View 1: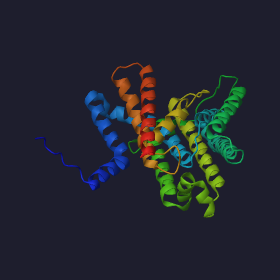
View 2 (view 1 turned 180 degrees about the vertical axis):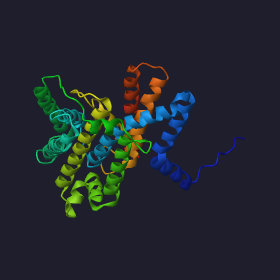
View 3 (view 1 turned 90 degrees about the horizontal axis):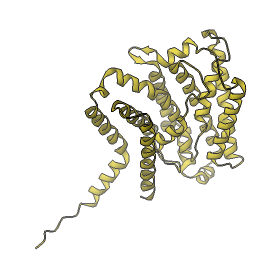
View 4 (view 1 turned 90 degrees about the vertical axis):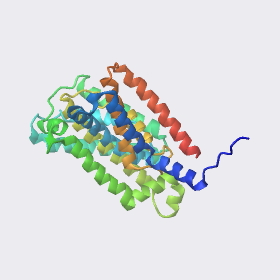
Length: 322
């Protein structure tokens, strides 16, 4: 006589599913840290942790902006080109800190116009976010190469070098910057009227319009935020690298989207959190780091990245179906 296996109560299944949906990315992050520490004792050494934090900072800045754009149902493929353009702008003036205000002003202007152009193309001309932001990236690349003739020259300002490699009270300055940005934009997204409108527009644009919210303005604002943060990340990353070239930030457009989606932000918009996106970015950095610590070739990062993209896409499809 076979034993009857009791069914789990409905409330238990609901709680398990709810916990996995809300905290799955954080549980996976904790397990990944533990597994990485076991696989490589070097992983938890102070110098390696600091190195990962320094690498995380510029990606984290870009992810914050990408979260805003994806929450309104968009996509920003121009972030890497904005980063490189900001880095080139940093060499347009003399190499002293006295020119820093001019560089910041020029970078802000370039980022504002880029974000505005992206937003207008998507909202007013009904261009798909993929094509609109890709076209903007190509235009910026063309302008950058025309100005530098393919070989940018100049020195990174000491202030940017300090932002990229310096320390404040034992903590990398770029990590402090991204922490402050995460706090400010986290409050903006989750505790302000603007943030509620971002979720409304991403969840149901027509409903948002019926209650008096202008979806176009919200979407344009999100693209401007993304471009601004990408420009700042480009300045910080150029300070960390120590040199300026036309490919600063290359690959960040894909990494930021993968991290954001992996962190639970729905590609369809309206669902997700800033903290989840940042945890997704941290997971990417840890995975890339452990690949190198285990002695695998750099090319293995590409394979791992593809696997992560497939996994993130599968999880997104499953979440959407549920």
